[in-house]
Every structure is written in structure tokens, then in C-alpha cells.
Length: 383
Ligand SMILES: Nc1ncnc2c1ncn2[C@@H]1O[C@H](COP(=O)(O)OP(=O)(O)OP(=O)(O)O)[C@@H](O)[C@H]1O
Image 1: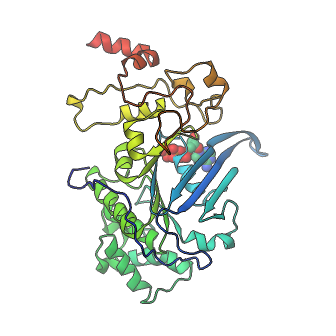
Image 2: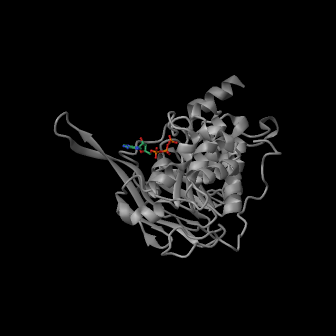
């Protein structure tokens, strides 16, 4: 992301005139009000065996007891390695999956097990943007049909008509409204993602779940799409659950960031606290592995995590990160550390660790030796 394309302060503005609520029973939320509250959210996918009669032989603990809150107009970023449960969390919040346990409250209303009918007013307020703009748009439909689709499904007829609203939305996302009758294949990757964004905006959402919204795009256009989403957040007061593995993009976009590991949130904090004073060893490892603008001038050493993420079918007891952690001791295997504000953390910075790091991304040399002796030996031989 280039300097020119970044926005230094992406805190949401405080529109004193929030949009009218699509749900007439609940007053429109104001910036900073709690919007989404998730507690003990759990998703265990069954593992079935048998050719005719399927037996449940285990479960994939994709998300296991996750708590977080998103305020109106705020972006919460979710980062973590592949398979740690980010997408499943997003799909649970969007109610595309039925959780195994836990509670999802949206504007104070428990929507965890709400029926289709009960969910209808909320559905329009929670929208999703997917990773792959190619796969998420029907190639046989025109842009007009795609973007007006949610209005049609929900029986919404805007004052000036659907076509006028679609053209307005295309303009908001930076597309030419005259391309209303074009098909997805006539657009570039970035433009297709803009079509997906226009579709998500069709019902005036209050919360957008963006699941890796730019990772399928060329690096050169990632910033444009991120900046578009940021504009929507700032100008329309839309909250985001922003899922991505790119730490730089998450830092740029989100006011708060949650780090997931093997189905759990291991650390959550406001952006600066998390990136400048990380306390969980896993957050240290992730940050140390992130590419840097000037690697040649950097004094930062990389922490190499030994091995792969353990299987979510049989995760380690106690702290799930302990099998790859350089600080693990006996207690880490017997007691799961709670996600709490540990000593030295600023308010709202929560960490789940028995032996947290000091906060600065310090020398990783010692950790590297403990973590991966074979690799260290190889590097020493080579140098
Ligand atoms: N429908 C499903 N049935 C069984 N297991 C699933 C299902 N969906 C996801 N999983 C498993 O749940 C775990 C979490 O997957 P999830 O896609 O949420 O992770 P992720 O952090 O989003 O990863 P990625 O960045 O690769 O998308 C993985 O082990 C995955 O294989």
C-alpha cells in the first residue's frame, strides 16, 4: 500500500445524524453504541465416518468460546494463520451457520437462533463481502440485476426506483453508472469487488463482514478497495468485522484487532496497543513474520514457529499455543489462560497467556533457538 493511498487516521467520524433505522422497532444506532456482542461463540463441525450410516467420530473445533464486541461505526480486524477460525466466525455472525453454543446479540436482540422470519429485519443490516469477486458474482447476471438483487429479495422499493438506487450505489463505489447493463466478465478484479461492495450496500447495512476482501486482488489495487471500505466506514458509519491475514492491511483499516489461534481469541486490543505492545507470544510471532517496508535497515528478528498449527479435531489441552510456544511451562498444559487485562496492559487490551511477553518486539534469537534448533543450526552453518 503506497503512502499516498493510505489514510493516517481512520477513526470513524461521528455523524450526529445517523441514518434512519431499517428496523422500525429499534431506534437507529449511534456511533460508539454497542452494535454486535458475541459471547462464548462456538462452532464444532461434526466429523462423520461410515459409508452408509454416518457416525459422528469427532468434531472440528473451528471456533471455541469466542467473545468480542463491535461498536457502531467501528472496525474490528481479525487476524491469524489459515485455519484458525476467522471465516467461520464471520459466517456465524452473518448467521450463515448455526452455532454449536454461545450467544450473538445484535443491537441488544439475541439473534443466535432466530428463525428466518425473526432474522429478516436484521439480515438487511448485516451484510457480507467475500474474498473472491470472481466467484461471488453470477456471471449470467448484469451488474444492475446483481446489485438490485438484495432489494428484490427483501421487497424494497426505494423512492426513485431500484434502477436509480443501483446507479447511485455504483457511483458511491466508484463505478460508472452507465455500466448498469454490463456483465461481471467485462470488469477488472478490483471493479468486480466494487460491484460486491455495491451489492452489500443495497440495503443500508450497519455491519459489514468483510472476509479477506482484498486478498484475491492485485497488490496495486488492494489499497483502492481498502480505501473505499474505509470511506464507507467513515462517511456512512458502517461497522466492520474485517477478516484478513495481511497484518498491514488490518492495521490500516481497523480501530481494534483480535488475534485468533486455533479457534480462540488469544489477544485483542486497540490497533496501536496491539501492534506496538503485543503481549501474547503468538502475536509476537505473527508480527515478527510480517513483511517490512525496509527489511535491509530493520533490526527486527523473525520468530520462526516450529511445526504446523495442531489439528482443531484434537487441540492441545490448556493453552492451545503451548506446543509451539517458547515460554510454555507445565501450567500451560493444564490450565487454559483466560482472556483478561493483564498487568501493564492498557484498558481494553486483553491477553490470554500465563507468561506474557514484555510488550516490545525484542530479539527473537533466543526464541528461535528454542523453537527450531535444526533451522538455527543450518542458518549458522550458512553464515
Ligand atoms: N464446513 C466445515 N466442515 C468441517 N470443517 C470445517 C468447515 N468449515 C471450516 N472447517 C474447518 O474449521 C477450521 C477453521 O476454518 P476457517 O475457514 O474458519 O479458518 P480461517 O482462519 O478462515 O482460514 P483461512 O484463512 O484459510 O480461510 C479449519 O480447520 C477448517 O478446515
